[in-house]
Length: 347
Length: 111
Image (cartoon, rainbow over all chains, first blue to last red; front, side, top):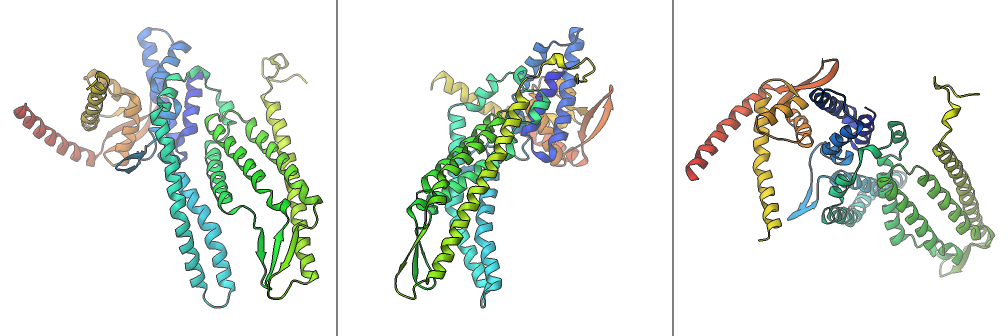
């Protein structure tokens, strides 16, 4: 019954977390009853090929799991835009988008409001209003992206192709499936990276000019502004990794390899900040000019930020490198002769 | 109208027609206790083919709606989840069967 265990583990991977064990136990009971029934009719136990045929007829793990989604909810605008299979992913994306917009948009305003003299509620109201205006295009964009995904899945029969092409015998063992990249982690990564990319495309061209309260313009050096495209490239590499892992959760080495690559690129791209001086230039435009001490302070803060960022990326890169080595080491097939019959390894 | 389109249309209409009737059949069959697999087998023996991908999630949905109740119990050394009609389920089934009979007699007169 190894095939059945592998099949049930694969279904559990896609099931809603709260009901995962209960649904899997019920499916197992029904499938085992069916296997027993057929074995009784044949007068012998079923072969692996016969069990595989039965499981294939039952449906691919993702398809079976999709039927157990709490409600078959859809998004329709005249015609169906997002079907029940894509809907759970869409709904998660909507919730994460709202949280990502609310936290940076409202919490600072609430904190500033309590510290500022005057009208804390007015500040909060202003922030909420701003978040509401930002939310509309963001939610529309998320809806359009998921409608496009749903359209592609239906137009090209991707789900039907998955359902007909899959082979129960090719499912990894439960132990191996337990080490797969979690679906929730890939989805969270896709949403977070997509939102960050959108933000970076709109606002991330690194502020060239900061006007101080004294009226002076603080310009960042061109080397800082030149980070715009490299950061965008790193974000797209990470986004691609999450999409690939959503489809191929078995590629456990990919997150570590991508993390290592992103860190290396980050170190290379950020290195010019360590050797470039100054990182800012100051122009006086009316008002009181910054004095030399204030300018040096800003310069010092920026230099410290650059060094800290560089060191931080270096440490993260080292962790990714170690994790990659560890994952690859675990994937290397071991020599079975090194293990005795009772499962004890020779020392 | 091409043959493919004709067959797609027929399949869609057939699915729509069957959807409600399958629920009636499942509720009626669960006046006696069953677990998923035996329910499917019994329905098939009575001429109602319903694939497991439809039936097993449907049972859970009907239970969530309060029409069925279930309990885990051991049978032949295996734990199984047995479903049966709840009190609400019995009342709804009675109404559904009356409605079905009404539609059926009207249809017979129309056809």
